[in-house]
Image 1 (cartoon, one colour):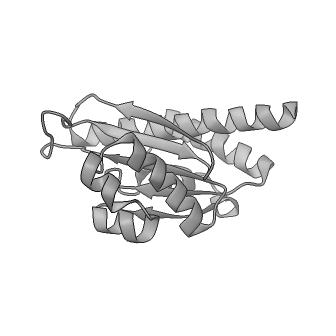
Image 2 (cartoon, helix red, strand yellow):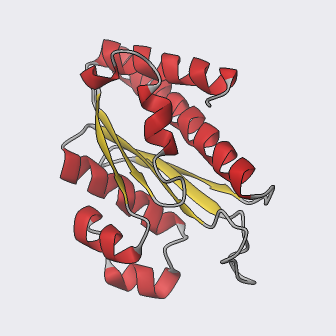
Length: 170
């Protein structure tokens, strides 16, 4: 069940994409489709949401999103570069203007000293320009995933607002 705040964010995202006549897709690992679920919570989402790729394992990140095996090997799947590459890959694979991506360790296990449980990298943007955010607190799996989903949607809303300001100033 989506909370009230995320419904408001989803509605604002919907309004902006509708007005801009732009499309969005998702590339999700640890969030497993929750970001897509937040987007489609608003009626009429088929006008701007094309779909999502749940790339829970590296093999799918490579095959469907074009994430480099070298980057995965050198930095692991939980890093800023992979989140950015997932955005680019989703835009390319699903032919959208924008994408939202999430990759991380939701818990309760799987963390390391360098990448503890609760570490989730979020990214959104276009093939040319992405913004990122790192979530680093462990509140238990369900809450970690809810926080990551909300923060991803909020970050995308801010990105869209900055895009509309850029286009209206230009």
